[in-house]
Image 1 (cartoon, rainbow, N blue to C red):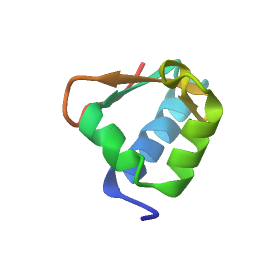
Image 2: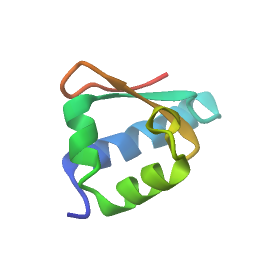
Image 3: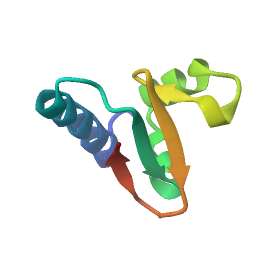
Image 4: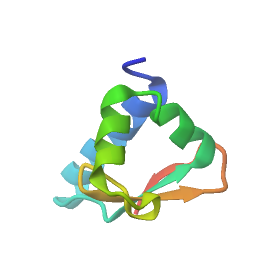
Length: 77
C-alpha cells in the first residue's frame, strides 16, 4: 500500500501548517486507528520506525508523534 487518504490528509495538514506558521509543527497527534492505517504506507512506516528505537520517541519529518485514544484523530500542535 503506497498512498492512503489519511496519509494524503497528513501531508496536506503539515504543508498548510508550515505555510501558515512559517515553521514546522512541534507534535502530531494521531489516533490509534489512523496510526495503524498510516503504518500501512511504506514511506511513513520506514521513516517512523527508523527514527528511534523507543516507540514513544518516534518522529515523522522530524516532528514528534503522539498516539491518542481517539480513533482517527489527526491534528498538529
